[in-house]
Length: 325
Image 1 (cartoon, rainbow, N blue to C red):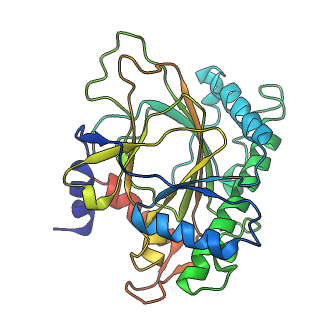
Image 2 (cartoon, rainbow, N blue to C red):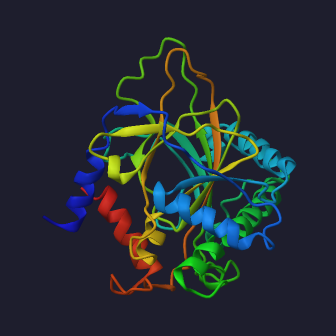
């Protein structure tokens, strides 16, 4: 059996409903006074990450006003007519541009019920809406992306400490000033559902792992749906809902960091379920920053468990393993 088919079968097994549990803790970690508390924070991050691969951070340094501004820009973009958004189509392989109902997870075999607009700095070119269409959008989103990069690098510096790398190891590997930069900010809009819509077999986002090093997810209060399932519980499919909170960033380890850590840091499954009959059924917006190393960076763990591979080749491998047929 090929590696690709092994991965497809692994993900396809996650397509069932599963059992929701509430006793698993998604730890909330306070980043205030970061430099003076670095050792304590690093210990907390490491403990949470090696346990379930997910955690939330608060007092992270991004002002709530800036988060709300980015969400407002996101809503305004998705409110544009489809024919306008279609002028800025997704560049496949470059994570840039707009797509809608086009991501089909092997876990469910049907399109995710969402649209997205992806921002990867070196590849945006003419993919920005004009100021006539959306005044100030580009500046707002680029500013927010830079703020996300700063938080992600602070968190990754703690993992660098724990893995025995230089403290700025991951910041150098995610350098936004060069054309090989491939970290991505994704604006997401999950479509509203009518009160009587049957959601059987429908998912806002099917079960998957992220391909990057570290994901930062911003959610709005009351717009839930995110669930996680640590790999050790994959067979039982015990899912835990992650409560959204405007002041918290939900973070998870991605496949790239799992490989870079020689599998010490787990990249675990998560999904966005469709709302039940008594749940909020309006539109759901979220903002996800995917910190993934520059294309030419070599990924090699401290123990050398896997052969070195460039970040570009690794992401290509992961995409093929999850979406090839």
